[in-house]
Image (cartoon, rainbow, N blue to C red):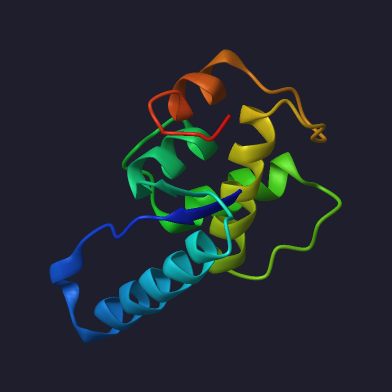
Length: 115
C-alpha cells in the first residue's frame, strides 16, 4: 500500500495547494494501478512519531532519527516520509529497528488500512 500524508491546512497558500494537487494525482494513479492508498492525517503522523499530535516538524524529524539511528534523515520532508513508511510497517508488524509501543499502534488505529 501507499501511505500519504493528508493536507494539514489547505488554506495556507498556493504552494500547499500544488502539493495537494500532486498528491491527488499520485493517489489517482496508484488507485488506478490497483495499489491501495492510505491517507494519514498530519496530526496522526505527529502523534505516531512523537506522541503529540501538535508536534513541530523538527520534533518529528528528531524522533524519526532516533527510531532509525542508521538512516541519515535529511530534512523534515524525509522524516515525514520515513514516519509514514514506519507507520505502515508498524501496522503490518514488519520489522523496524525499535520497539513498537502500544502508543504507536493506538495513534494509527483509526486509519483505514487495507487487509
